[in-house]
Length: 420
Image (cartoon, rainbow, N blue to C red; front, side, top):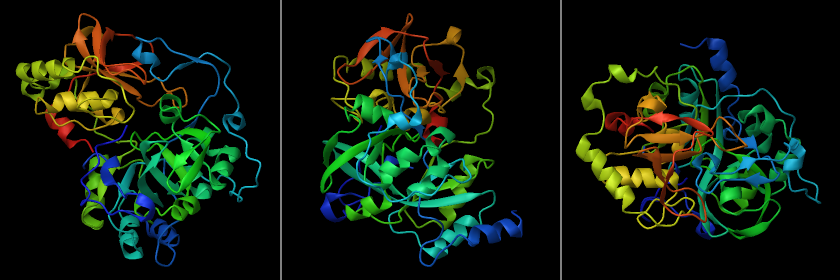
């Protein structure tokens, strides 16, 4: 799930054609003791430990099956036994650099990308923001892996692992492979994008070995390298942070961060903390798309029937699932965020019994991260959805499946425009 890249003048190119690409975001009183503890983590020039937060789960390698018309099975359904974490890795023969044992887990809240390296003075302001519990730095770039443009992070495996879910964080083998120079890719990129575990694929500056599947939980980030590997490839340095502030309203946190970050920085939610949504009955009729807007969006999507699914594509001739939604709604003048987990919060949820044409239907079908919103379709009517299903398929109208169904969302243009 990748947003459209800005023009060449928008972002600098690093050596080897690697691009610092902010487009993988969607455009968009603490006690003194805690402050001292956070400030004590700062080091000269760059503050806090060099790492980044990702919500990730281990891939479950086994036999997968999926129904061709079942969006609930978009990334496959596990039919074999669940393998142990260490079996989820492509074994390495060489010895990787040591990775420190797992420390305390942190829940990531927002992801930030900046145009320039973050400096100590800026980070000192960040860690003083009320409610922030931990901050990590990383290197972020858009690179080509096996012919696909992939938003990739360079991290310190020792500290980065503390920001992933417990199963992933506990896998010494996974992080040892990353520390040894392998790339860990998301389940969607691995399974749907054809990056087979253990395979060496063309990357920036040579071959990259797919050493692990680890779903990121951030719809726009699909690969992770060690910081050392990333920098050897010419990644921009220290241009991304993840902030853990699990009890702070996400919109308020974003505003506070943008006040202290360099101009042009972008902030996207990872695990949003939002005010409780109103029930549908409490929304005014003007809160939702008009009948002409719904007709325009549906006709626009229907006009792409038969066009191929391509991972990361957003039109006008190829699409992935959320790319089709974003493109079709844009034709009706509705600004939608780019990825599924952000489109999930663009309006109130409605019962399946009340679904209407133009509502968005969501599924959780990623076996590596069961709580993650992994697929979206547009409700067409008469029990059918219009969707871009998966690689090898095309935009089509299919029966609505309730398997792995997460819910139905009625889009509010005003809410959608605010989602970051």
